[in-house]
Image 1 (spheres, one colour):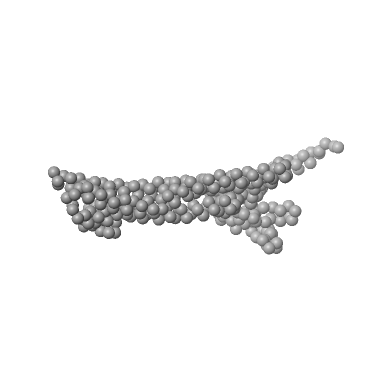
Image 2: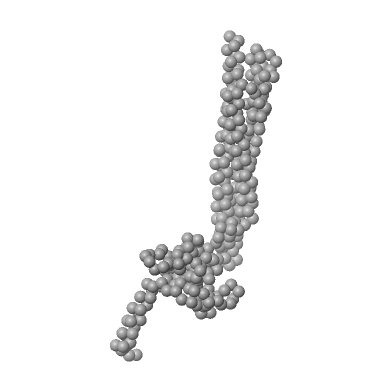
Length: 304
């Protein structure tokens, strides 16, 4: 072994300086890019130092075994690809915000392995789909009942301001029940008729609310069931294959975690929706009771 000569050291220095300078540059050139069908097509490529390269707003990766650039199998989020387009369309005046990968492709490569929303839902398995189906049905029904009860509450309030009773709302039907009492001087008969009319209206107001409540309770329980199933699958994998390869245990762990997440995501909105719907039903029932109590009080005062 001999010491490097002055010429070699100077060449090494100049090469390193050149590399540092090139890393700070954004260049555009034409090169072959591998296509989805396996062919290669010449495309205009923009490269930011040694960090990232993209073409047409899509990021590229270098395939060393084939010595060719190729598009990532899955592109980053829209804001990241938008930054790539902005750099490609930059005119050179001022600064343009771009995105680089300090790991020189490794971070972008991980995007391919990051599950999408649909893939995460699929990780929940059949338990996850059942939970989502129950949640979707209960949510649609809950929204329908909430709007129905809110509309009913508005109709009841409007009826309270009108002396003429209408069969189209609960308060109107209660008032018609009062008008049907033969002996209105009998406070007991009036009170019994009003109570009976209110009792007939309450089941209509509360109809379907228990379904929302049951669904909100079932969802986290299904999530817990999925968690148990996922852990059982994980322990079976450990028993059969050991703990040397984490990928073997990933399936069971994914089921355990995603079913829990799905159960909570379904349950929380249903609990809130049930509270709103039940509150609307209670407001209508309260108005009916207040109006009935007012009618009974008027008759009691009239007899004195």
